[in-house]
Image (cartoon, helix red, strand yellow):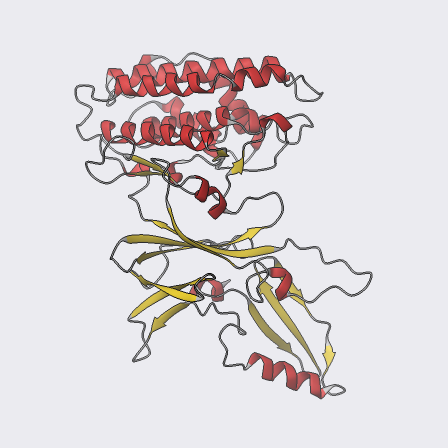
Amino acid sequence: REIFAQQPNRLFIRVLVITESRVRLIQYDRAGAVYSPLINYHKDPDTLIRLVVGLSSICEAELGLDDTVRWSSPQGKKTHGAIMMFDEKTEKYTKYKMRNLNPFFKSDALFGRGTRMWDVAGADGQKLLVKDAWIGTVGTTAEHVSLKKAVDVLGVQQLVDHEDRTGTEFGEIDYLRPSPEKGDVYAFENRIFQRIITIRYGAPIDSFKSEGEVLAALRDAIAAHEQLVNAGILHCDISRGNILLGESNAPEGLRGILIDLDMAMEIMYDKKPIDSRTGTRYSQSQLLLRGQGLPFRPAHDHLDDLESFFWVLMHIIFDHVQHSQKWAKEFIALCNSTDELDSGRAKRAFLDGNLLDSQIPDCWTQECKDMLIAFHGLMGSIAIQKERIIGTMTEEWDPTHMHALHAQKTGHYEEILEMIDEALGAPGSDRALPLA
């Protein structure tokens, strides 16, 4: 874990464990660990020699380091670096200079995606982001595929370049591990290293300073989500971290940017799939949470993502400003519960009740309070409509009525955007809020 943490360009690790008579080779990669049998090197010294020579290679790629991530260290200390992107068409590398020597984000998980994000600059000085991750090959859509469909979609993260190392020696777990012997099965998830480069945007939405700023960002992110759905892509992980603030004085449509499409999927409502995607707990829809493990849970749809926007707004209204509403702190804690059913039931009960003006912190304008109450009412109404269609999710249901509900998509977005537009520009919405 420490090696992966200290060496952000580390793809895999190979080590020897040696006793007084035996040796074992262990490989750690993003699918887990794989190891050789214990080998008696007194009886088989040639194998020990081969192992030591192999691990003494001067080729960085063979040692598990990504040699496209490079630093200059003239006196033993890193001074500057760059990330190289290989273009298969031209068979040349494009150089992106690091703006910082280390990634600004790196996953702490030992196995899985192993995500790393870097601040870099293009040849023209444009601020860009490099995202490296090991993506599963079953039931997932490569992020660059979704981003290509989102090209020129206003308010959605824009792709600049990408690299997919499928089928390469050090870019796919299947190629890093020995083939199983006849009759054996290796239980691991194959993963592929993928790199995307996108435009670098502003801070997460919860870095807001005023009501007007945060509502404008949320409004434009929802509008961008609609365009993404129209392009056939469902985001599936709406959260505070995946909505960024636009640049200062950004025009309408760019005041909030929707990012991180690595969990996005192609819309397939007509096939009524039971997908197993997870999202960010506090903002997951109540129906997806309550339906976990049930045989006829409906597919993740745009209404689930719209509900996620509502929970993002709830957290912003109640969890990021100073207030004395004790009930809200307890409720938000339940939304974040590690137990899916507890979180889902709490959210469902909240949507079933009344949200009163007096329950909302007074630092928000009356127009904002009215908008939140209206948004709450719409999400509660949609929850009831869905329940009438799917019942208990323990037996098959007729999808005809769900298709009819999905056909109202344009109206759903229009109603929500109109709510927020009415709150935008309210007197006092530009004043600084008492942030928690």
